[in-house]
Amino acid sequence: MRRNGASGSSRSTLIALASTVVFAIVVVLIVSRSPGWPEVKQQFFNGEFFRESLHTIPKAFVLNVKIFAVAEIFILAFALVIAVMRGLPGPVFFPLRALAVVYADLFRGVPTILVIYLLGFGVPALQLSGVPRGELFWGTTALVLVYSAYVSEVYRAGIESVHPSQNAAARSLGLSHAKTLRFVVLPQAVRRVIPPLLNDFIGLQKDTALVALLGPVEAFRQAQIDVASDFNYTPYVVTALLFILLTVPLARLTDWLVARDRRRQLALGGAR
Amino acid sequence: MNEAVPCLRIEDLHKSFAVEVLKGIDLELGQHEVVCLIGASGSGKSTLLRCVNLLEPIDEGRIEFLGEEITAARVDANAVRRRIGIVFQAFNLFPHMTVLSNVTLAPRKVLKVPAEQAESEGAELLRRFGLLDKKDEYPDRLSGGQQQRAAIVRALAMKPKLMLLDEVTSALDPELVAEVLDVIRELAESGMTMLIATHEMTFARDIANRVCFLDDGVLLEEGPPEEIFSSPRNPRTQQFLQRIIEAGRL
Image (cartoon, rainbow over all chains, first blue to last red; front, side, top):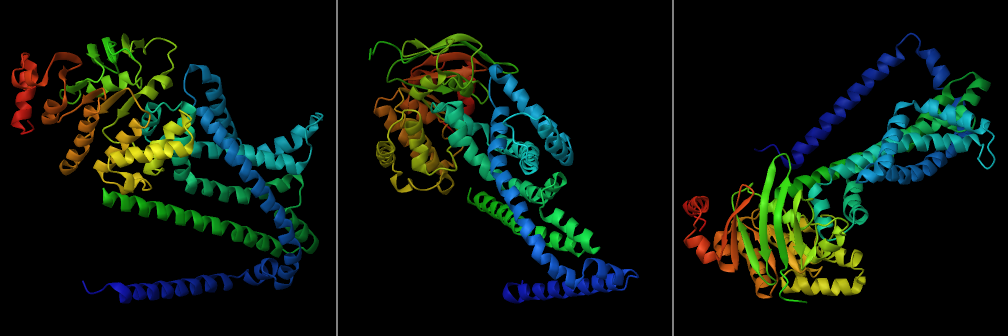
């Protein structure tokens, strides 16, 4: 075939570019010619309010990033404990296995927003001494509990994807169950589940906004405040843009890792 | 060590999964003896080896290793497995570790050998089996024959008193079989006690002190290789060997 190499790929690029431009023009035309557009533009895309929001919302958004960073570390560790608990062998450990199952079922079943309300308003109301009462603390804890349930399932899928023969090989060398898990199974399992883990963390980044329901002023809450004082919705758009700025790099990283894994598998398949 | 104690003694071993796979096996291996298990696929060879390594719990009978009953209750299976090496058909190397790490993992983490010592001993073993230049490679960069040799070295690094080889050449391309068989031959010459499940009849005839024919979970016939291969008594053994000869494998 003659159509290959540089000329073929630059032709594809041109076609992609042209079709994208046409598509964008069509969308812009449809939106800007809609009867309510001038009103919407004034309410959501107001340049003056946009600039004003840039003074308040990014500052508040730092709190979202903090909640995310702290929650992520605890989720990674706690979810691993749950996943390992669920895989403990033998009848002695039945209660722990059952506990892990109940935990995952419970926190995947209850809507995140309810967990946040129940923990954030319920636990401080108990007035237990020594138990923190901050909304931020309980909001973050709720996110950790909910996301750990999901992430523990991701870990578990990874652990189960490691072929039983790896387990047999390690045990045959005299390694205990714990050491087999630590040195043979988990390193392979975790590597395999990095893309779905990152996917869950994209969800977590967005859900940091739910903590606002308890009171802490993060980006979404700040936007609500700004909207309430000016009767203009532009701060919401600013907030949305900030979340996109945070999640897109992670989404692209996830895609890249998945693509890399696929390439590797193809390469190995060819070598064997 | 008392050389009169058999290395391995299996008595009336029964094992079932959905159906009974081993139907009362009796087998004894003297120290430094090499015994080959032959028989069709599904005859129970692999299960027998996995039972000896305690990878499968047995249903009935007993297994003694160097005079100690390893199938008794409250025996530390990890301690037993440290002294019995097994090599699998599919190599089962750890894909996330270099060849040298594969070899040194168990000595370091189980026997608590210091890393430096484990590495120099591991490198020495790899040199002996012609793999020293591969020590920093990952398993998927090795040929099948090299992977299987690395798996043998990994088992040897624990200095086992008994090696179980489970059809170690069955997953290899024909041109890679010889290098692995040479390694096993060298092990036999060095006095390693081995129980070998194999389809390589020529190899079994060369290397084994004794050959056992396993058929449908029963040890039908055993004896010196010359006897089993040239004048088998049991009609099932005759039939099996006839098929092997027709396939050009003997």
